[in-house]
Image (cartoon, rainbow, N blue to C red; front, side):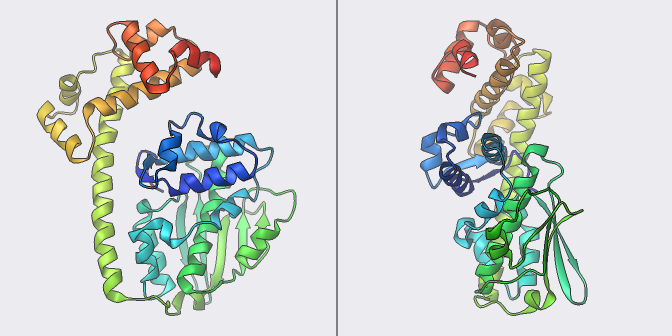
Length: 338
């Protein structure tokens, strides 16, 4: 599973919002507390954080009386084209087994939140799914979505629908879900001990129709470079966010020079690293202040003046001005709306 602070494309969020609207959940409700604007959602080149997509999932499951089976429906909508180079790497693999190992290697470039484990024996392959590190409210939906999306990709890379011999979900269901049986080739068992999809080993060893060794190796090289860049970006950005959070808690200054000293680098070095990752200290400070401000306002235990002090503002008016720039209303108005 990728870090919740890692970046990902907007496609998965778009698919989530489309499904939500079909279920009668408004776009306004879906975007609540995500810090994703309608403009960002509509731009195919937008990048968001994994935690923002997870908030979308939380908003969807919270808005519906029951979301069982909904993750399966969403997973059916994922296509290789949604994954860019990662998708090309899957389809150009020699066999489904090679595609599976490629997928596990570069899982950080996918939209998955689950952890995957492959288990082989002489006749079958089991793919086990685990989302225990995520909030309980979203685990079932995430497992359904990731398992279903995986099967969508299996159908596409092999060029035909592949049938599972067994599909198990650990969460319970009140009724059979016909679209799940159609997608997996078997009616899932709910309330099981594990989350798992089982297929014949022969499916994993057959040649793939779009296999191309040269293309696959090129995709491996590009995915390695992308993953390295992602990890480097995540590393510096996360270090800055953690350092800011510590300073917020201690109500210490948040200048770039002080933060760089906390990280044992010069402010010039920190500026260069962040610039190489397409961001800046000012941008990260703004994002961290906005997120922390909203969290403190939701708690309702601090005055606007106290929040301004926690965030390192010299005057409450400066905080109010910044908050209006972030969300369009004052901190007090935003808290009352919630």
